[in-house]
Image (cartoon, rainbow, N blue to C red; front, side):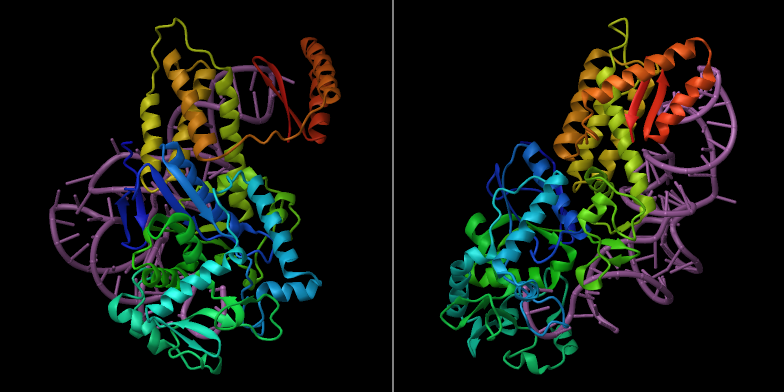
Length: 492
RNA sequence: GGUAUCGUGGCCGAGUGGUCAGGCAGAGGUCUGCAAAACCUCGUACAGCGGUUCGACUCCGCUCGAUACCUCCA
């Protein structure tokens, strides 16, 4: 395959040619959700970003194994929790088993991801199902001399690691700076150094989620699950690791360190990070209390929302920005996305009705091949979906012009255009038509009857009655447009 | 304070050393009984100040501003 795909690698801070380690196979690991709360807009961005990557790599012919974890081993939320496990705390509040909570929110996550037309990854491993692998990894790191045990907990020795390797090569951090910025807290008294991170934590008595390990009954450190599961399903060295920019430090930096020591090998060739979604310029996050759940978006039931937004509107909105840019949420921006998406969809409908121009040797007066090349070039340039969308809108303009008989299109070009729209809109961008309402036969029959009556009065030039019917339908959220081919109605 | 990313027209958002993003909103026009849709035309946009250059929104420096991460824990 001669794709000239280039990917921005956070590790080098440059765009690099994408050369898989073992073509045509590609291994991709993406940090998934912590299932302790309802999925919100912040979950949608990485899911859609890497869904785009997954889809495009597959389109190019790669055999992709895409692994996205489910973090169901509880983690702390913020300093208001007193060292209590995220999931365990929620469980106590709701009087549920921790795994019941994890199950519930995983299901919710899958449900909303499906609504966003995000493809299920090849493997969705759970951290709780990979405790032995994580313990094994810790043993390797201890054997290699880069971890130490204190009171049943195990910590990674960052200082020692940094003597030989570079702790900070991903995030641009410099260890000396990190050290000078840290202060001593009694909580971290077990650590030899504040920059060290936990591989295994001994569980406190109130901690519900716990597993037996050589050092104590406890639970694995947060960074470990991704390293262990990535290693298990993709091997020591794999192609792509993705996640949100907020995970770059310390999470991914620490993953690099652990894997390097445990596997005696670099773990990841290309690091990809999607940027954040902001709301009023601020990161959207649970701990900030400014997040809007996906369910609230879909139903419109949130004080900050002036209306409901469909899953495909959200998806289109996200794809209209490049994944490495911040994307600021507002009702205005989302409404613009909704209208733009509708325009794109109506372009597709028109495309289905278009016939090639007559006579059959009439040439097209525009270049479809060029348009398609532009789309591929945009995708090849670090997955530039906004550029693809811009070219699709150029396609919509052509479609409408041909429909209005203002431009001509040849049969081969028409086929090419249909092909292009199918590939880019549905296969690669993963958008789909939202059949807004399953109109039953009664509705269809009634509308047919009403529009026939309206047609009759229009022919008699009784426009006041005609407009009265149209206005009344509009009040019922039914729009009627009089086209050359007759009236067309849609439910808004 | 450190690290990183970024500051584009009313809004969202691409991109480039010297002709074009695109969407939404707005103005005018064509079409239409009207409306809608569609099509055509229209906007002294690139935070500020210097520098490099024949030429910078695009490269370099500084200033200002924004956001994320930088303590525990994940």
